[in-house]
Image (cartoon, rainbow, N blue to C red; front, side, top):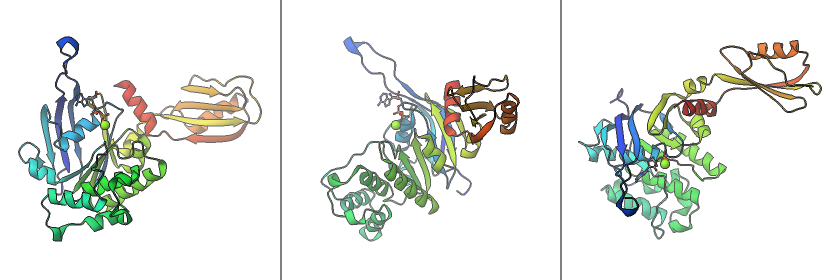
Length: 316
Ligand code: ADP
Ligand code: MG
């Protein structure tokens, strides 16, 4: 198992059934996944990134057994989901995008019920430890409906881990969650990963993927447009920016054929975007100085995932 991927997805296609329109007209079924393939390596934090409607939840729901695929194959922890659905399901814990809870159960009961669902004997249950891990021990006996949104998310993470799966999947774990809670969830995910859990998370927050994930697949309109390490993806951004403050107001924006873009605020601030394969920051500054600009201050900006994402989704 050591060299096998935690999840292998091969040419996965999902077309939703056509919906009946007005007056009985048929609309064509939505092609949510148009032949998606990628592997999730064991031990990684893998980001499935894409804009709304890209097909992320469809893919997660196929892993969860909630949506039937149209074609293609999926192995979870080496178990084909068609041939070994039960073992596949036991190998994965899923935190769904939508929060759904019976409001009259307490966190402790939610976890005990889930353990019962998996047939885990009382002596082997981990409800207390899990509540501790997601920092909900003090809410053990509170009604779920009285928990904040962030607490509910954390309870869902605990619920997904009840059967100790080697893989944890989170669908948009931090959508609509405030900055502090987002941090807390990131820490929880990183902690579980350090303990050996392979994590897959979907997000449309690039910042989240860049900070947390060691590998990222980007999907757009149901197709994979990138599948590589986070480091390599960030390196794919060709454009860099130098922001310069001149010693005095400029009469006009500087211009040079080697610059990709120049933004001037009408006074002393200029931002030059350049292709890093063509120029370096020193050359940009030399060009500006040769044009008589006296530099008072300089900052450079590394390309981040946002830039790559925009480039890739624009091209696709
Ligand atoms: P994401 O999670 O990336 O936002 P989804 O997987 O939810 O994307 O949706 C992918 C596409 O499939 C969207 O166009 C969406 O409208 C469509 N879709 C999702 N669920 C259904 C469904 N149950 N029936 C028909 N179309 C659906
Ligand atoms: Mg979704």
